[in-house]
Image (tube, rainbow, N blue to C red; front, side, top):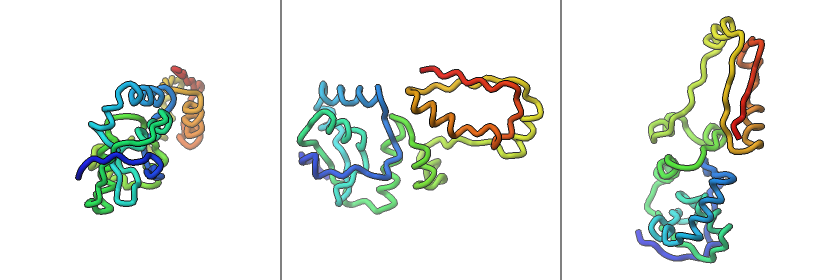
Length: 175
């Protein structure tokens, strides 16, 4: 496999990409590309033989934002479908944020864990019932980067489904 320079318009983002970088982190990536474009040569975008991104979706998005016309790529045309899926996860373990909805709906949890992703473990209903009997007041601190992210978290937290019978439910958002 060799690196080649290609028109950015020929590269297709991966619609099933389970990683996202939002707001400030995304702008930092754009600035990083503008300030250090050689980074792309060192770590080119990896695509399959159909030019769909396997590694570097957020870099591709940042390159478009930085108004680059061409980017270096590596075509990984020798990978099976399973190897491509594995590569997508292993390439993304260290940065950004996981889109848990995409992971939950498009990926196998056993594979994700095998490839190194820590899947959150939620208590069973029996554990929740035991907890609900002993909690009077509690605090939860949620750190998030934006109001939108906080609203998503709030939507997913359904107190009744968790069977929590606390008198006080306080969420401190560290924005």
